[in-house]
Image 1 (cartoon, rainbow, N blue to C red):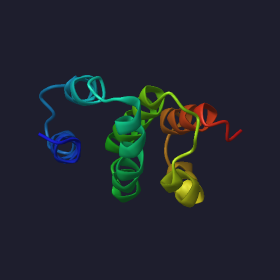
Image 2 (cartoon, rainbow, N blue to C red; image 1 turned 135 degrees about the vertical axis):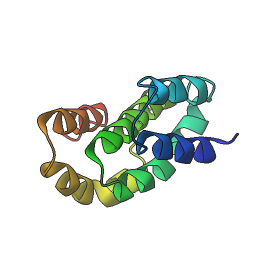
Image 3 (tube, rainbow, N blue to C red; image 1 turned 90 degrees about the horizontal axis):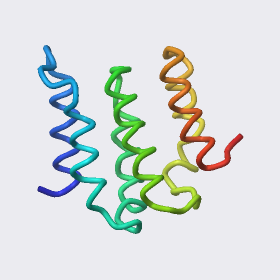
Image 4 (cartoon, one colour; image 1 turned 120 degrees about the vertical axis):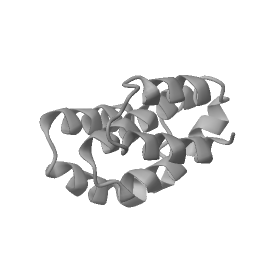
Length: 116
């Protein structure tokens, strides 16, 4: 299965009720990101950001954001992906209305890229 399809499956599963496997997203990240090269991880960030922008559920958005953080770390570069540059303000406004945990996750991503 390719990363995009697996990400869609993970998001759909996480948005289902009830979630029977609390480790589903963590396992998804281990399986897919763990096997990526740094360049594959970097190129997957832009696509993953598009899913983050569409997500309305806070819990799912946090899981997608953690996926982006993992991709960033795996990419082994602090070069900022174009989708993050282009959508930074939109992502910030999306997370402004969310809880403290969500905001701290966003802060973690921004610190990685030295946005602060």
